[in-house]
Length: 124
Image (cartoon, rainbow, N blue to C red; front, side):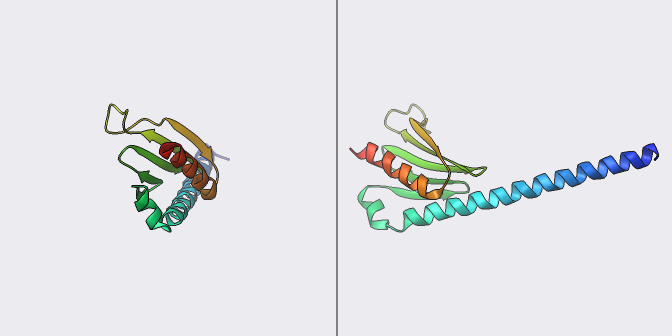
């Protein structure tokens, strides 16, 4: 084998590995987006409840958010995990409140449960 062939073989191997990583990342992002949409749809199903609690529902790429004048509860989907956070806007010193509580979960159903717990904490 020559240096040229060895170099070209190594270059092809690295190129194939890069393409495989990019494809895996693309599939994960599609899954995260689909799971975010699933949570959004579940929350949007009860429009009257959201209105009663003074909540607006939002979906931005990988984040599903319940926004209230006094607090924010959101779920961020990344790499198959969901980070559910709650922030108090009343004590925030900037326009983006820092999370006061957060919990990592694995499914949109678990995220829904944690969001309900955080909402109950905020409205007690």
